[in-house]
Image (cartoon, rainbow, N blue to C red; front, side, top):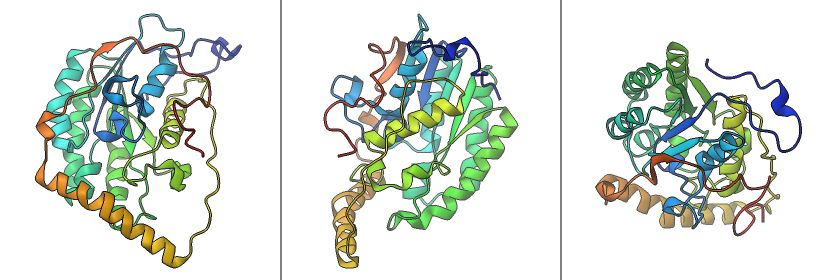
Length: 287
C-alpha cells in the first residue's frame, strides 16, 4: 500500500511539517464525508467533518496543498461512482478517500456482494491513476436499535472492501475496529451521523492509517448517567420518531437529492492553519 514511512525529521518539534508525499486530496462519498453532524458556519456548506480535519493536518508545512470534497449527503453507491469519480479524476489528485455503501445497506436493503462488485470497478479506476486510495470499513451499529439489523450486511460488505483494497493496493480505514465509536457521545443525536467528537476521533484514525504525524490529540467523552430500562426504551422511541422515520421516508422518496451539491467542488488551499489540538468551535462535544 502506498503509505509513507512516518519516521524521520518530521517528528522533531511541535511545529514540524507533517511528513507525507501528497499535494492534492479529493474526498468522495455521502453525508459521512461531507461532515454532517459537525456544524461549522465558517466552512463551505456550514460543515467541517473528519475530511476537513484530515486536510488541515495534511496541509501543514506543504505549500500549495489543495483539497476538494465532492461528497453529497444521501447519495447511494452507484450515484457516488457515477457522479463523483469522473470529476475527481479530472482534478488529478494523488490522495483519494472513498466512502460509499452505507445508505444502500441501511435504506435500500442492498446485497453487500453486489455492492462490492460496483465498488471494485470504481476503486480499480481510481487506483489506476497511481493515487493513494483510502476506503472505509463501516462502523458497528450493533448497539443501535433497528440499525443493528443491518450489522451482518455491514460486516460482509467490510470483508469485501478488504479484498478490494488488497486487489488494488488501497488502504482501509477501519471504522468497525475503532471501538471508541461505540460511545454515544461520538454520535450526533440522530444516531446516523458522527458528532464533532466522533469526527475528530475518525480524523485521528485516518491520519494514523496513512502513517502521517499530526497534532490532533485523543479526546475522551464524559461518562453518561445510567438510564433505567424504561428510560432507555422511551429514548429509543423518541429517537425513532424524531430522526429515523423522517430520514427513512426522505430516502425512500428521494426528496431534493438532485438539488444537493458538493461543498468543495474545486481543489483549493485549506482555510487557515489547523486548529490547536482539542479545539472545537462552539460547544465542546464532551460536555
